[in-house]
Image 1 (cartoon, helix red, strand yellow):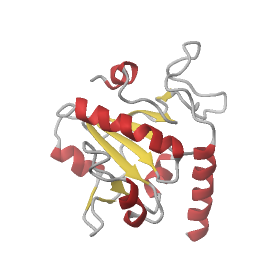
Image 2 (cartoon, rainbow, N blue to C red):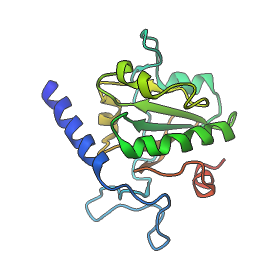
Image 3 (cartoon, rainbow, N blue to C red):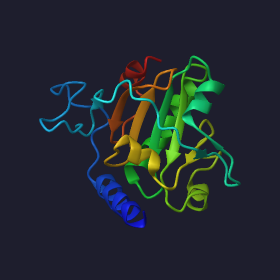
Length: 191
C-alpha cells in the first residue's frame, strides 16, 4: 500500500509540475478530445468517463474527523450539479485556480456546488495552513489524504476538475488549471 501511495504521489507531483495550459484551450483544438491512445489531452474537456458514478469514499470535512461522501453532498443539495476539484498545497497550478473556483462558487450559489478536494498526504495539518475562510470565503475544502479518490478516477495529475450531474454521474473532466470564473467555463458548466 505504501509503495502504491509513493508511486501515486510521484505521478501526481510530476504531472503537477508540468507547464500548465493557457486559461482557455486554443480554438484549433476540439472541445472534447483524446489522443490516439485514449488518454485525455491536458487542458481539454474530456467526456470519455461520462456516466461513471462518483467514487463512494469518505471525505474529511473537518480536522476533527467529520466526513461526507459526494452522495451526501448531492443529497444535501438536491437537483444541483457538483464540481469537484482535486488539488494539493504543493501544486502551483492548483493554487493558481483556487481563487477562480472561489469566484465561481460565489456567483453560482444555489445552482452549483463547488467542492475542492485536497489530496495532500499530510491532511488537515498541511491544508489548514493555506486554505482559510479568509482566503476562500465561498469554498469549503474536503481532504482525502490517501489519494484514493484520484486513484479511482484514474487521475494522472493535479489539478483535475470533474463535473457530476445531480445524480452523481460524471459529465466531463478537465485536467490542468483553468479560470473557472470565465464566461467560457461558466457556459461549459451551464451556469
